[in-house]
Image (tube, rainbow, N blue to C red; front, side):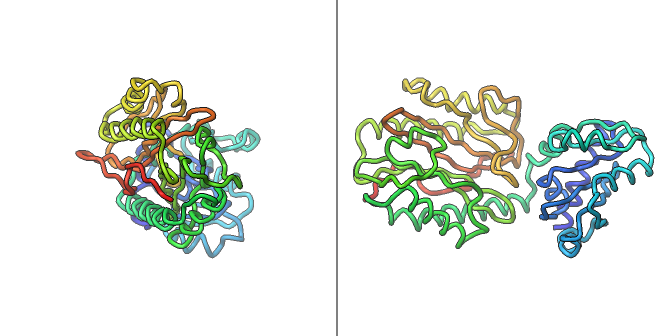
Length: 356
């Protein structure tokens, strides 16, 4: 995708101009990949005020870097940071940026004199919030693979199988349809459902359990994220009640998404539904987050978030209710905020499924 990567570098050039910077060193590997397509584990990128760039990596990736980002001049060296920084000094200018959120302090102290080195903060991660068409296509593929994986696993759920088995089935189904799981799969049955990030154990599913499954595929480096909660055999009245509350909160949160709104406003819409039902104290985490080359990235939907939504931004909407010593419910979808509508990329029914 050389055209897309060039376009992203030009957007960064605009951000550098706004910040009165002549160039910048990019050291976060996720941001390097976003700007060039390079997927190796060692690289530094220099981006100039006109959008041109140079990349440095070591000899392990000499062939890979030329294949993945043929439009960016590559330098093969083990001292890539110093090498590119010295080239930036030699090129002249007044000020250059560095990624203070990823560059170790010792490396920052070793940057050569001759430029005013200024922290970039989250400049590139903020650029990554808005996805281009190729990124959205990869997210759609990842979400489709996730829905398909769940479709394979649902018929296998029954009393006696363990959380760990269910997680393994989901992971295998994701690997068959994508690059594999984008994060550690969560399967939480019965009282374990009260732990939002419970890790699967050998606890068997039993009749009357609610089982929460949080998982997602990765395609082209882009992450899907979805959660469904199902009942095994039967659902008690209290389980149906909290499920309906979470379902309503999730639906209203998705419906409220629109460009220009503060992320905290969306969080408040869903949170109010849960609070009005009397379960406010049992929903402690934020409503959702952006997804892309990372499973958790800006914007973050939460009560204290300063982020704002814009068009072509994918986010998750994932309210939950977690009752200690009883269990919990979470429903999550990956959705895209468009200029005039919201596109839901994960499509498995949000109605309570009872399986046996």
